[in-house]
Image (cartoon, rainbow, N blue to C red; front, side, top):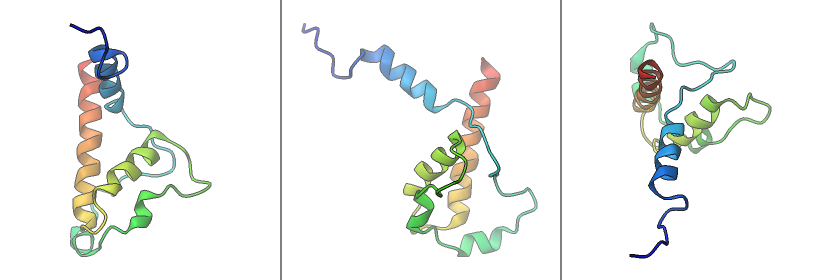
Length: 100
């Protein structure tokens, strides 16, 4: 068997990279929608390509980066589905932190 690895660093490096992606996010001045947000307008609004871009001068937090990464998958879809994906990403990170 060859010692060449398909992924640099092998499975250990791949696992570490995966775990880092699930680290709890840090927020700056940005935040998720409030618990009392009206969901109907969000279901009618479409995510534009501009949501994938970080705003110049905005805080460079892990949440800003994560949000723009998530947005790439939701361009053309409703803001409600985009919000749902953001909530799931945060819940996954929070659950991982609680298990440590």
